[in-house]
Image (cartoon, rainbow, N blue to C red; front, side):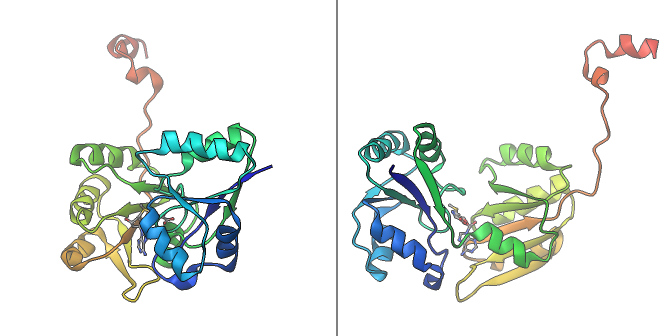
Length: 243
Ligand code: SAM
């Protein structure tokens, strides 16, 4: 039976391309890549000559159907994203679910990942952790998402772009309070850096931060005041009368 391989690619340092990832990419019939031009360069470095096709946010429905059709013909397919693990804040989830549904094996071929690399070196409690990925770009929606996360006690991992990091930290300060955070920047690359401190401290130097970054935020130590179910009802005055 044909397999769908989920293959990790480096997040900056080409040395993180594992021998197994190379072997799988060489052996499959087709590589479905988030950006074929980007993956073509990677394939060139590792002398991988397998044909490429695109699989991204905007063609994932039609391309997903095509991938399932190829699997049904007995073809092995590898899915890669531009960096790190497919499906982790990257395309892939839908075709994985479809392949499982259709009865094909889905095989992870692990390697670099920005979230876990940042977490293990952050110095914050590593488990339990919550991987959130990107917050919404719209300020009001971002705040709403943070409100929903406010009382959860797990160390939380966010991805963020350097253009939005200041606004995101300001929103976090406002909603979550002045927690301890770690920004892991340019992981595995020449200018890799960890910035550790309170949100207020990090905000003082945030304008200097460039490049790709992961934000790790300590969990809440505060408990949400418990709301009894009947306090949420419209009839609350009536009910209270009898308590
Ligand atoms: N699939 C990837 C993974 O497994 O880590 C993540 C892809 S997501 C579209 C890209 C985001 O991951 C960036 O905006 C940044 O937050 C984070 N990221 C990727 N590479 C990174 C690196 N070398 N250093 C720090 N963060 C990185």
